[in-house]
Length: 480
Image 1: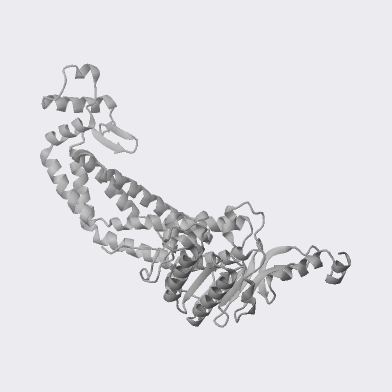
Image 2: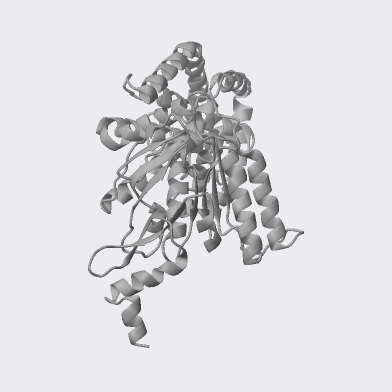
């Protein structure tokens, strides 16, 4: 049977996957599980984004939908655990008894009460109905299987996660069940003379031999029906477990931000490559001890799609880069963005370069940076977005500036959107717009980690300092 998926409506796209190293640099790994990051590494098209958004919205706002989603999830988890016990059975007897539980769990999954409306519930409900219709013969086979199990279970043997339990199948006492097994064992010559006194239960491996020897025909039939039932079960449904984990993971993040009054929105789709957002938050800061997250407005258009980000250290440059990068990945994964509102294009490729002081590459650090960026340029197009953080810092200032400007021009010529954090003041004199930290207009004139357009180099922060202390250049000269 074809694998069923809640994650993809039209199948996984063949676009360049987002490298896992970028998730680490953007600190998304501090918020989300490894499985969620695996799913987010494949950007979605519009249909899949809308489908995932619908599920997350339903889990957010529809109590009944969330309840049934959770019920289905628990049933799938139980089926998965039972199948693990089945596959790890160490003998035929245990395997065949546990298999009955597997089939029961499987039918329970298909019997989950789901509403028939909406993309997720409608599709899943219809799919389960289709499986149940095809599995009418399976129901008959399972009835035969249970009859055979009952036949060999006069002392009913129950294998569970907590151990092995015996009952007599009629509500009788435990002693009657034990006596039945011991008497059968005696008939086969495997009993013990002191069995009546000790009422001991043979080891599981011995017990299995007893039952198989007592009911050879029944066991042979069980094995045949087991194969038939196993072939009919659509075990691919278990792929839904990790996919549903994805939705729970995102919902948990939404609930966490709600407690901090951080808004979230489901962006509109931009028709051309662009990224605009009002009050965009870097929610990866939730994993730090920072008390307040300052949002930023973002305006990246088809006309202005490549920006340098400059300014003093600690001014929020990397935070701005990280907020755009992480939120773009969330959007392309069908998740809400943490902002007041947004309109974003469905970019197909996301690239990033965050150099490290230590590098095991065969070249020097600068050579490695040139190599990595060249690869990004070659792969990029007008549906790509690149995030570069202090790239080429391994070279001299003049060489780094030359490489930075050349890289930005090549990316721009290919239509790739780009945010490039750098300390190089030379970029202010280039053809590319510059973003930098701004100072508030309130009485304290404090830096608030907000980023805005700027046409002055980093050294101009001296003007901000003078303003803060109600000085000017002339008065400062008088004090010298």
